[in-house]
Length: 367
Image: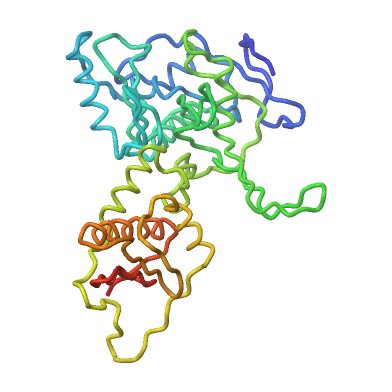
């Protein structure tokens, strides 16, 4: 890896990746303001850029050129109030919050601290927002450079933390002229194993590699990665955003716990005493739903040691008061709700029937 900036054109786009990559800083771009021509600034600072190079461009200068700044007070409580209003406007949903730190999902779909709003490398009366559409920004910059005779890849990068790991790294928010994912699925490894899940986020890897020569305080907002083979035009970095259905970590622990408690509190109310809400509508006996006994056992372990009522498990669950009187029956109702919530956490819906002697939970959703 070469970290020094070359004096003139060197290398080319046909380099074999096995032979290595060069990572070159672009110095001398200077301050960027709204309306600046980024392509011209980059070419002026680095006339040695050549076809096939990958240009990793910090999102901040893209945002500045596009006028994505908001004015805020320079200090005092008014500054924090203004910053919170800006954060609220950039937030699609809160993922986790600890003290003053908020991890949120932006309207783009990125999960980031403070929605990527930045107060560094800008005067104290402004905050920098993320580009409105980083992929579109990357395509425009690529087109502007192509108009100047340069066929290059553009990666728009920003800094993120990672769950379960300390430290920050740069990732791609936008991309043009490259496939964001390198798909190895269906290939066979040297041991004869077919790869079924492997997709490499190559634009993230390029963004992280470029950060090694950009730094945070060196005023180097662009780096060139040379020697990486092109892999098609690509559809942008948005393909890296995991959809809600496959997101197994959509909330922080405390937020997920709170959401679970809210869901438990909203379980359907039981029918009036002596009624059976799950009775078959046609007069034909309804088949009992198939329930995994292991899931029922896990649910009951969750509430083991909390329940006071007597409990019997069969085709359903029967809870009876531990003593006489209204208080014991009320406690049985509370115990029944705990069992229902534990079963719901295992994906098992229940119907409740309350009578004068206890509570019966049958498997299946209320009708």
